[in-house]
Amino acid sequence: MQQEDLKNSFTPFEVNNKTSSTRREFLGQLTMAGAGFTIAPAITKKVPSEIKNLMNPPGANNMNVSIIINGKKRTLSIEPRVTLLDALRENLKLTGTKKRL
Image (cartoon, rainbow, N blue to C red):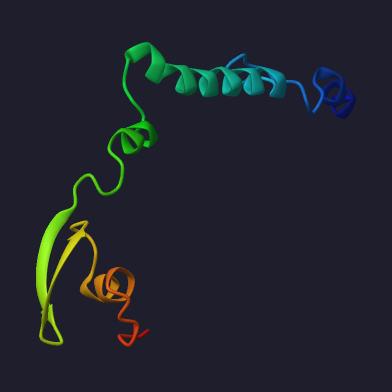
């Protein structure tokens, strides 16, 4: 008789406390959170980093660098993060310099 009472008292999917939510409620909350993250920059007037990059395009922070290569003085306008290897290969088209892995 005890086993029958336990069987009738609850089902495996029944939740005894209301602190948990159903899948539908969870998905609704997740959707609202996503919408909030999407709308928040417009409400707070903050500009996302992607738009900042468009406002400050690559090349806006270029530095003028003068170097002597093979006896000739060359002046380049490059970003501060460009390595010497990349400057030689990409800007001066001196492809004899190779990257080692």
